[in-house]
Image 1 (cartoon, rainbow, N blue to C red):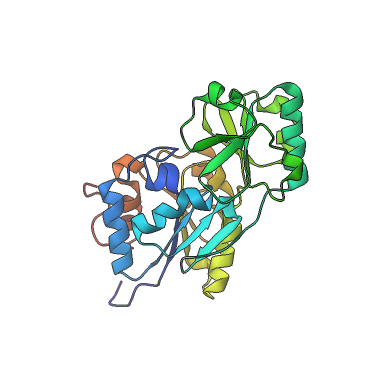
Image 2 (cartoon, helix red, strand yellow):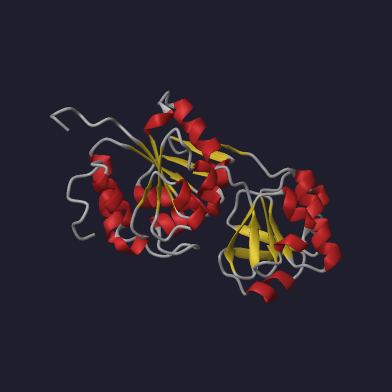
Length: 269
């Protein structure tokens, strides 16, 4: 670096499959924790960029001692530990999708508040998915038409059968479970821009790490985009750099490669 101070970078990390070693959580490798400690020591800005709802991601702010986060797939930002608000899904489109599911007998669930749970009208969704990602509550009188806001919808369908559900064509969705899809915002870049503008920081100093479909829109030419070794092929194709997998010390490897932390990129994770 010729003795010059390193330019401050603004890091935004996806959680599932990037910070953790599983698409629905999992463990955080020791090498990742060490790399983040070193990035902080070097004075870099550290934040989360996740598709998770704020309530499902908040604990990671404490885990990593971060103060800033893009959550809800770009529809919510937290700045200096203060949630700035959550933009819901387009209600008309979400209700149309749910009505279609009802008519076709497709089990579904919905999140309509900032909480660690989803709501269903009956037990069909749980019986189909056996899912434990979040608490599922039953309300036989649930009427989505009466809800003021809808943040996420969960639709049971086998992989490859999504095209048979017309309502999914108008909404962003991702699959993290073999039995259902998450209908959720997928433009994390929108939240990144808001945070960068708040801190009056140049976009070119952004560095994003991701692995999945909902990271595609935050992999942009104006900043540095790093795909994990376990990332989907489409994301790797858009990346500035493809690092090693989560369990192989991918975050530390990339940070050493670019000189953001000390050490040889080829040293053991």
